[in-house]
Length: 294
Ligand code: SF4
Figure 1 (cartoon, protein in one colour):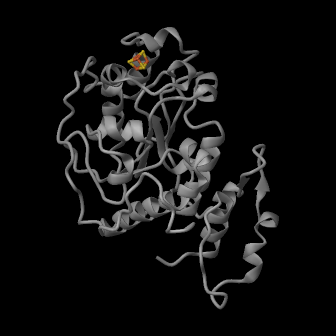
Figure 2 (cartoon, protein in one colour):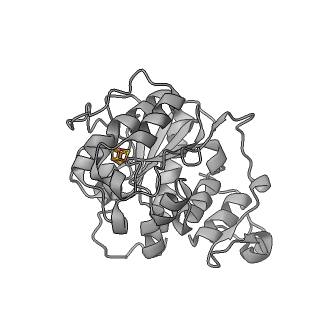
């Protein structure tokens, strides 16, 4: 895929090295810092939203629930995903085997939000500051699903608000998107204390809310970020490294699902950022095959 000058600047902001012929690119591109706005997190540079070529027009948004390569010789614990993507979806799970606690199938957005706010179906209700329902465009073509709210998300009642959210913003911008053009949520709507991994029983108690969100958004593509969310939703114990690089599907839906690393992981392991870039390109190519723009 050809890399545009704008994508190059975002990739560089993410810390992903990209080789491009000197003949093809203005050398001034590589003096990146003068072309972006510095955010509070000094190691990330956030481009102005107005500079993003967001093709979504007149988005319909909903309020928040709360208040309302690096070296290829790298030897990690992962297997390189060399298998080219098969068209279009590789079935991993047709149906969730977990128990569905709540029947949300007839709820509209407002009713669903109210149900989440009032929910006490698992112990996490006792440790949350507030629920984190999700946010974005209700008919977004891309839906992004993480594992659970983090500390800052719990305080703000919004998904992906901390440094990992800033990195996610840069990742989206690298493919011409931003968070105002997608729908963001998590498998759990309440934060596990001390940012521990979500447990299966918590996922089981909460998954009906997510399933209804997917039903309502009807995305063209789902991007799952992080091992925990991926393994819960695909009902597998396979490592994320074996699952990324090819499309999947969940809940018996035909919606293609691409999985990649959680931005919080990428902050700890920046050497894997280029793999997430590859996953985003896979997602983009699936959209192109379906004749879908953003
Ligand atoms: Fe309810 Fe989900 Fe929160 Fe558990 S995590 S209390 S199931 S909203």
